Structure formats: C-alpha cells, structure tokens
Length: 502
Image (cartoon, rainbow, N blue to C red; front, side, top):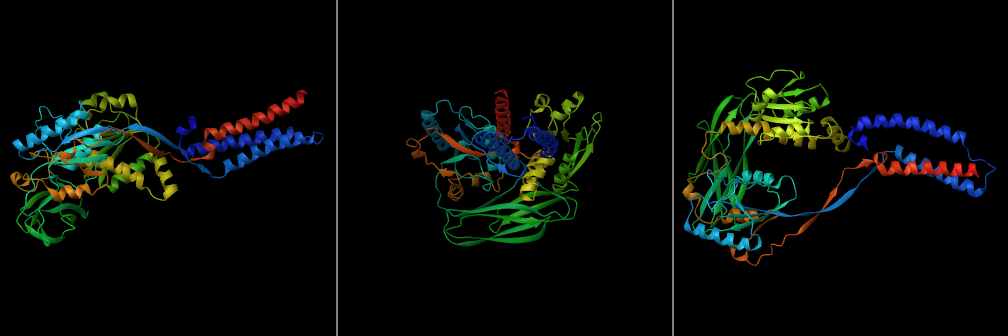
C-alpha cells in the first residue's frame, strides 16, 4: 500500500478521516437495507453472520492490536582470506604462507589473499604500509562483505595483533603460525591515534596487557604521565586463568590545546599518545529545503557528540570555503561544489538515489534513506521509552564521518597510521603469541585452525538459515485485513442483490 511509505502519524490521520466517512456510509447502508422480519430464518442467520463478522473486524481494527510476520531465507556463505604479515619477513614465514596457500587452493582454486587494508596480495608479497590492527580488519571485512551475509573469514596470523577488544563479523578461523618461545615477556598495546575530547569530557584510553610464555603469578603496574607530570597508576594482576587483560584509563581536562600522554609498564616498555582538547570535535554544515522535526533530531545527537551543527535552509546558499563536513537533507549541493564534496565528509539524508550515487567515491560519504528520523525516534520512544537505537545509528555515522576523519587528518604525518605497535618492531615480531591467540579463540564465532589440520578440515560451503523477524504493524495496516473486510462487504452486497433479483 502507498500509505505504508507515509509516517505513522500521517497515516493515522488519513485512516481516521477515511474511517469516519466509511462508518457514515456503512451505517447509512445498514439503515437503508435492514434485515427484514419477513425473511426466512436461514436468510437472517446468513446475513446476520456476515454483518457480525464485519462489525467484529472493525472492532479489532479500532483496538491497537499488532501482528508480527517472520520470513526464513537461505543465503550462501562466502569466504574471505586474510594474511596478517609479521613485522619482518623470513624464509620460515614464506614456506608457511605457500603451504597454506597450496592447501586452500585445493578447495578454492580461484580464491585470493588480502591484507588487513583489503589490498590483494600479489606474488605472496605484502603491500606497504601494512596494518596489524583488528580495528582496520573489521572495517575491511565490512567493506568486502558489502552489507550482505556473514562471511567465513580465514586469517593466517602469528597472533601479534592489536585491538583485540574489537568484535569481528562472520565466522573467524585463525590459522596460527610461528615458533613458540619459552621466555616470559610482558607487553601491552593501546591506540596509536590521537585522543580527541572537549573540556570536562571524560575519555577512556583502552590498554591491553598480556604475558607471553606465562611462568608465575604477578602484578603489573601501568604508569600514566600527562605532559611529563605523574597522572595515575593502575594495577593489573595475572594468574594462570588471566594471561591477557583488558583495562581502560580515564582522563579529563579543562585545558584547551594539545597534551602528551606517556603510558609505560614497570619493565620500561612505553608508548606516547597525543591528546587534543578542543571546543568542539567537529564543525558540520547542514543544508535542507525546510525546517522540520528531523533537524531537531540531528541537532540533539550532534550536541551529545560535541559536534557543532550549523544549518542553512536556503538551497541557493553559498558553501563556506573552509567547510569540509556536510549534511544534505532532501537536497544536493550545486554542481560547482562537486569537486569540494569529493574531498569532504558528507552525509546525505533522503536525497535522490540516482544523483547521490555520483558522490560515493570514498569512505567519507554516507547515505540514509527511508522514514523520517523523527518518525523513527517516535516509534522507538513509544515502544521502549528511549532513543537508544536512533541515537546509536546516527552517532556511529557522525563518529565515522566527522570525528574519526578529523583524527585521521591529525594523524596523517605518521608513517603507520592504523598500526598500534607499542615497542620495537623486531621484539614484537618474534614467535607465536599464544596468549593473544587463546584470548581470541575464547570469543564467540572465533576458533583456531592449525596448519596441520587444514588438509582434513571440512570447508564445504553451506547455506545458513536466517530467521528474520520483521517489524510489527497494526492490524488495520495489513493488506490482508483490508482485503478480508472488502470481501465481507462485497459478499453481503451480492447476497442481498441476489435476493432482490429473485
């Protein structure tokens, strides 16, 4: 029905008006065509039953009953093969890589290897710069999946990864390689990107600490300095059940400008991080053809994200020269600004699909279509009393487009933008990191697949049955209810006409 594309508030008003006209006409019809007392008993029962069903159906429609529909569909599972290159390439790695490649090609003759950045591996040689960050890998998997079914992801790795707290999509099979070393070693990792905050905002710095080749229980101190001055110390404790620990350290500052954070362990391993305190995390210019409730929704989410959102409701308005972050709602920028949009972060909301497709040439562009943001917000509030889903959807878009891109620009002069390495590369590349591999293997839908087991492993592709529960709708919104009511009315009318003709 065309009304399904209209907001719930508008459709209720339309149905209320149509309902009044329908009941008026329906009542008049019953008044003009009563069940005559002279009719036979069977005639009265038949006609009365049909009219009773009509009235009962109308009563059900008036009450706020909802119906749910679910649909099962089959979708093939695809595969992604990823190489986690060690920091220094050796003949042993080369032999391992070629062995795994030859075994997998028996089942998948046309498969290709990619690195964490999604670049195809040619001649079994890595591209530069390379990444060992699971955060980067997560983005790559989403990009390669193209929003379709979950994937089977095979990762050849020695376990010396970063960002282990990141959740990966799909079924993950880790293929470990590397020599197992016996020397106990304490290491840690944390973000390599600058921290961005506003005055008074509490930010959390994730720190992952692990013990390689665990020997004995111990406490490890994480020492924090800000601008050369002691800030705080945080303790983590290791035992046989906890050889990999995730923790975070909170910071807060009212002083604008740049700060330097030094994170160090008591064994001397340390890492420097930039911390920028700014008035707002991003300045975004919004353009729309009219002021409506959706603007208020965007303003609220932007305020919660410490983003300054400046609106202009003149479709002929000039775009500021220094602006590089935009929201266009129901309109598109002029053609003269197309080259500027290609280099900027842009969010399109309910704009023309054909025209906006010309702009999607980079990861800095995104699009939202469908119901208005206000309607989505109101639906969620009516069912749960909060705006969590709406805020989360918009918040992720704002973070990815406007905040994270600002961090990327601050980080553009670094040699390894997305690598979270915390000590000399030669030290971090030695051997297989068992604590990290075991930690990952305990996560849902992640397992270890040893190289010697590849030949006998069952790689038969299967179709997954996914049960999707569609959104609930009111009874009167269902096309089947409308058809049912129409059939009852036509049946009653045809029977009456048949009686009259006789």
